[in-house]
Length: 146
Image 1 (cartoon, one colour):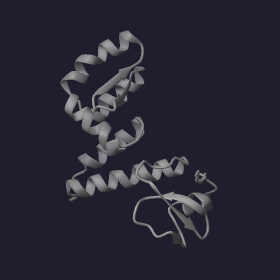
Image 2: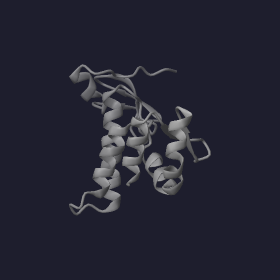
Image 3: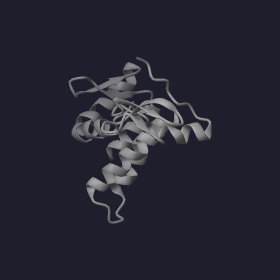
C-alpha cells in the first residue's frame, strides 16, 4: 500500500495523521481505530513521514492523493520536476482557499491587490501577484497583518 493510500484510508477511518514538531507521526482519533492503523503506520513509517513532510500543509487526503499520482506519473518528469509540480499545485490549492502558504514569508505591495503575503525574493512593489488570480475569481485574498 502506498503512503498516500494509507493516509487517505486512515483519515476515512477517523484517524488523523500529522507530523509532530520533532518529525514523528502523531495519530489521533478513536483509540480502537488508531490501534488498527498502528501496525500499518509502523511498517510504512519512513514513506508516510516523507509524504506528510512533502505535503507541506495540513493533511488533506485529496492533496496527498494528487501528489502521489504526480510522483508515480511516468511521463518523463524527473523526481525534482515532479516535486516542483506537486508543490506548485498544493500552493495554488492553498491560495484558492485563501490560506497563506507556509513559504510565503514576505510581504509586497501589489498594484491591484494591495499588501499581500508572498514568497521571498519578490520586490517591495509589483504590478501583479499570485493573489490577483483570487481577486479576479472573487476568491479570498488574505489581509496582511502587521
